[in-house]
Image 1 (cartoon, rainbow, N blue to C red):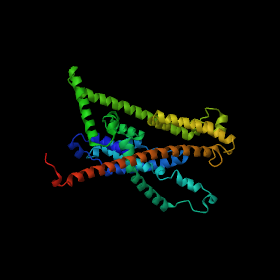
Image 2 (cartoon, rainbow, N blue to C red):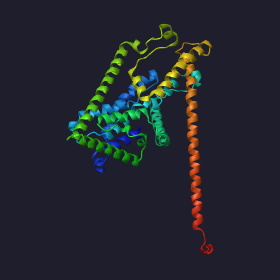
Image 3 (cartoon, rainbow, N blue to C red):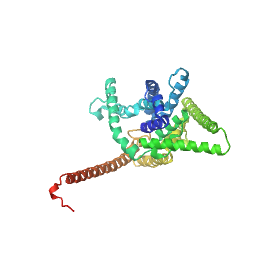
Length: 391
């Protein structure tokens, strides 16, 4: 995601060498604001993650809040806040906000604390403050080391369009009134100088075409018309953004005072009580579904129907999970968890095996080609002139 956002910033901030020098990219003001906002999000994600097991990266919110902060301080800033700085700001905020999940503070660490003494053979499983800090630092470096090789496969080769990165790039383009970075084609989302130059040339051609069309139609102010069009799009997107925030915030406030809104018994009170079949009309989950797309969300719905609609009743009636449905130890909630883990681990293991096999085969091919080229060079260079036959 960070690679895509950096490329977006370079693409729109660096059309000329002058712009590269005039607009900063890495600044301490962006880092500080990102840390402050990310710290607040970190506590929010910790609370939300312990309840649902799901946290939000908040990259969209971070880019919006960061832009709003520097927009309010625009009169006292000597250098304007640019899109490249916004990338650094939201990246810092996201890295801080997602620490509860990345560090296992909403997963493995609470699970270790929930273990009984007989399950741990008397071993202490609760970490103190210093041990938690050391744990977090170790995992931070672990992620950085593994992120480099994974980037080559997922970003450079497979060119995966991460939903959060794509949406954040669009958000930054809207806030800074730049072209939509996702409209130039998937080949430009990979970090090569040529792709950036090609994107700049394409945008210049589109602008020239628009100006020529306006000139041919008799308009004497093509630039003014294009600016009006950009302002109109800006206003429309801001209205949609503000309306969405208002709806989501209103629901969160009402759900706090009326908890029934988080679990509507749309399938009946008996099914809700016995099998925990409820509907949670959360705008935040709806927004995440919009970003993730139809294929992913469709399979999530299929998994929910299979797990809670088929596997859960079967496990209870067969006596595999005789306890309460929502009980993690004796209920079907904990039983179907192992099925889901087996499915995900199997697919990820097979996918990783395929990727590793392809990498090994490609590496072996490069080694063989290198040896062949070396042997050919040696043969040419070591031929003695006495063995040459004149033609």
